[in-house]
Figure 1 (cartoon, helix red, strand yellow):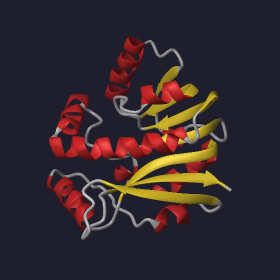
Figure 2 (cartoon, one colour):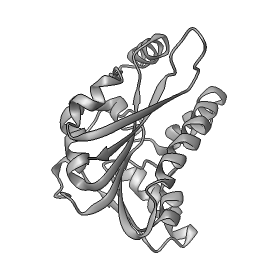
Figure 3 (cartoon, helix red, strand yellow):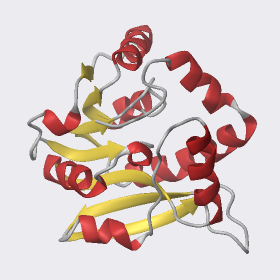
Figure 4 (cartoon, helix red, strand yellow):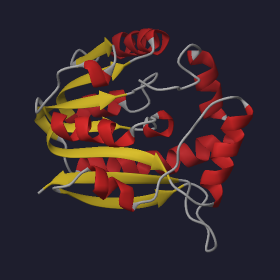
Length: 205
């Protein structure tokens, strides 16, 4: 589905997330993401999580919704996530190792979530369209934003041979016609620079 460089090495992924700057950005992101999800939480409904990685958001989702289906296209990431789900006793989480874009998901979930996935997706419009088709009510996702920090993010990944993508905020509305889009910036935002990441909530209207 993507060119995510961490797919073969879950340990490197975990190490990267523990770096001080990235960890600080992730905490900011998590606060906004979980606040957004709290507005859609429903203990009687199902949520689809695409690209859960090793499960940073999966267990919190399991406490908000009746059932979580987590679709991860990295076999190693899915293996680590299954171990964490078992250890936590989260019986309402199903981990699927597969390509989200190749699955039949239309309209089966109340909410769809994709955090950190669009960084590596070459065809974001198709991906967001599929997310929206999968959710009856809302989609919560993150995208790297164009700007100084976005350019730094692209350049740093280019050095290790990985293509990543940054987007303008208005692109989300272009990809999801018929959905209301609200965004919040997180990560290194200053009076002179935009935040690195946009946390977006799409609501069906």
